Amino acid sequence: MTKFPLNDAANWVEAYGSPLYVYDAKTIRGQYFRMKHAFDQDIDVDIHYACKALNNLNILKLMRSLGAGLDAVSLGEIELGLRAGFRPDQILFTPNGVGIHEIKEAVGIGVQINIDNLETLEEFANEFGNTVPVCVRINPHIMAGGNAKISVGHIDSKFGISIHQVRHLHRIVNNMGLHVHGLHMHTGSDILDIDAFMRGASLLMDLAHDFKELTYIDFGSGFKVGYRPGEATTDIESFGARMSERFKEFCLEYGRDLKLIFEPGKFLVSEAGAFIAKVNSTKTTPSTVFAQVNSGFNHFPRPMMYDAYHHIENLSNPEGEQRLYTIVGYVCETDTFGYDRKLGEVRNGDLLAFHNAGAYCSSMASQYNSRVRPAEILIENNTPYLIRERENIEDLVRGTVDHGLYNELPVSEATNEEITVPSQG
Ligand SMILES: *Cc1c(COP(=O)(O)O)cnc(C)c1O
Image (cartoon, rainbow, N blue to C red; front, top):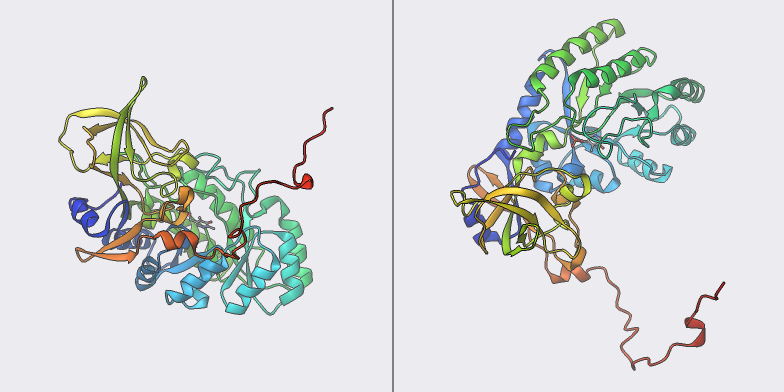
């Protein structure tokens, strides 16, 4: 659930329009230090913010100011990180399904490289041999968290080098002279079961003994935040305590203290965001009452993509009579934000707040239906700052090349070759 007050929403919308993404710096700081403090203070813990959750430059700069590193999944995210002031060595490049060209470019920039494919690792070794250290992503096949759409550790997953391929991995590392400095895993989102996570983490630590040059182990992310009122979340404090104990044990056996890395996205920003949309109309049908807002899956795709629940409230009429609504958007597709939601009676022009809009909302937004992307504001010291302008019509045509191809006479007939009628039988 969004963790900051939305009492000023009407003022924000008056100043910056709607729909609007709103983020709260204080909540982000709170989550960052809560995680940082969850681990024993004598362990060297690095938190790499997963850029893809929310990639506004101001958010990246805020993360940097807190001492975070960055987890980047594309050259674009690396570039954003550099522009936000991260040093290349603070950025871990964790791509999936990219070719060696992209990895070579990242090596050139000087970021840390994480490889999740044996074939790619061989190409990397041929190119860089022992001159560039590398991290490898292992898939421990722990089915942790959420549903199959957001879990990436299961046996059918495309992510990581399977734990069953470790002998092959060693063959490549030993024969091609690679320096493996890091081991990595990331099993997916919404992990509630600390035992399951610890099983995966323990498998990784067991493997780590056979890699003698490690400087860090990166256990990825997947920390669950609350989307529903009162919903259970990852108990980060007890997770931190258990992980600290296990990791210290490991370091003793390993013979050296390694760095412990996590790369949360959601945990840091999900509850630090809200999305404010305005009600265009209500519509009563034989089966429900729709509340139709000035947005859709173009701005807020998680409910439709992942069947994700996002809490919705009517900011303009919280004390109104509670009625049942299906909240939908204005996109010409089924774009239902929520079914059977109890809201204070909805009137045209009311502002609805969608909770947990910090992670995977604006960063997944599109211009579908030729609707522009909304503005983003950041609340810092009780002051709203515009951190991304609302797009305009020019943004819809930017990059389009006009050759004047069809400026001339109307074409009244197609040539015979252009009309192809499928032959029968
Ligand atoms: C997406 C991603 C994360 C962040 O996951 P959250 O569920 O947002 O915390 C971390 N690491 C990698 C490699 C990712 O792809």
